Length: 406
Image (cartoon, helix red, strand yellow):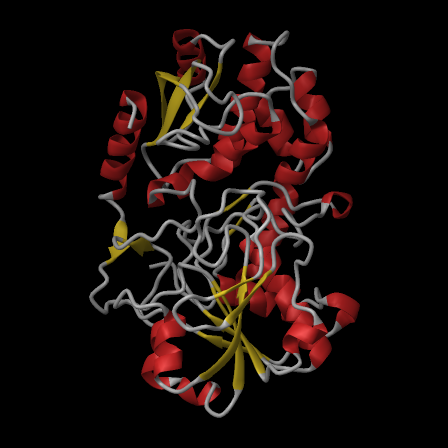
């Protein structure tokens, strides 16, 4: 690990040590744990399709699919999201169909040419089960996969079961609700950038609000967690949900620095600290760190950094920039921070920076932000254009929140 990556991750991990963790010793039972412990009747005698990946583990560390198969549950097909069934495929790379080496079960890819189960894939399936750890951010594509699987189940008239897991951002809601014209696989649902629900809560809202195709409803059953509250941000036994979310602290900074994906600067992919390191060959690290720290953004610190991505943008090229560390999760405002980063990039490096408007629109969810950033509109004024809509969303989701705050 390079020196900048090492120190920004060490600091981030130290901040996380002050948060409430699930201790992995039974304090919290995930939906998968509860299914195995006392809800197996949901699947008994049925042919099961399981939408999962490497995060679909029990608190013992065993993969859910292995436990189900060994206990006699008829798992007939596995469905893998972006990053693949084992979570080792880079973002955006096509995932191929395969056979699971341990169980011999057919694995269908839902990332590539096909993004939802087809009728042929479901013809021998009686119930479709979803068990994937998410990160609570709209453009993280696992929730798009969940919605499309709900569509497929509703169309076939088969039940859909969500095994609930923590939202590592707790109940945080931040950013604009996506415009309909900008919806895509990286933003399919009418929610803000940070949407404040677990997968089970979100599935319940999708079903209740009529967001499935043709206004259908699916026979939905959520296996809720026991013992989880939104202050219990995540477990110390962290399983990276994708190759570039290496540590739970990365989840905090991700909805801010992922907006850098819409530019020709690096968001740290190909380094040991993706999303904590941002920069480009034409930036000046001391200048950038000074300007970002001068913005006095709450709950975040910027330090000068030099790094060379081994892959992705600026591959093999030395970059100057900053390391980004969330120092106070309760006060950090990720989307406002991301807007400020892009605005400072434009202010300091207008002749070198390229912002791709379509990419920014798909990530942020609003088309107007690109022009406002380019014209030098202060981030606080950009944020004001969607705050009322975000407040309305928070009121909308309140009936669907199953878990308490503390």
